[in-house]
Image (tube, rainbow, N blue to C red; front, side, top):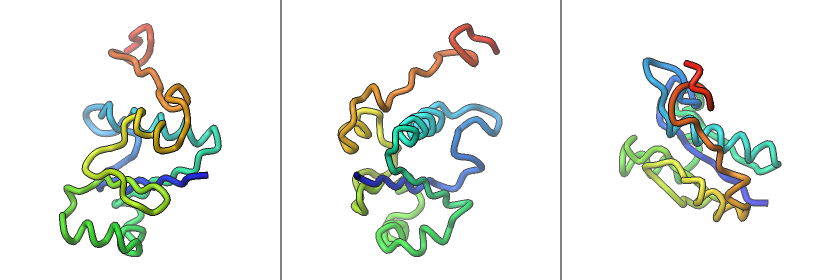
Length: 120
């Protein structure tokens, strides 16, 4: 089974629901990752704010940060090799890289409000 690692930039939370406004991209990637993990896919997120040692101890990540700075984050590794920088993987990319159907990845997000009825 393939292993995916995502190295996140410094932030207060990985879900995108904290702070003054919701970050839909963080919410999407967080939800897609949780859906994949529930199916047994091995995915690990590393937070710069909460796990700085992970960034230092990984020679690939450390070298990228040294050469390109923090704007290179997020960085995605598949089985230890860099496959994407500066943006989170799309659901289509996750599907392709992990060899799963896109339906196993994508989560339909509400376009407004908190849910299908727009409860907020």
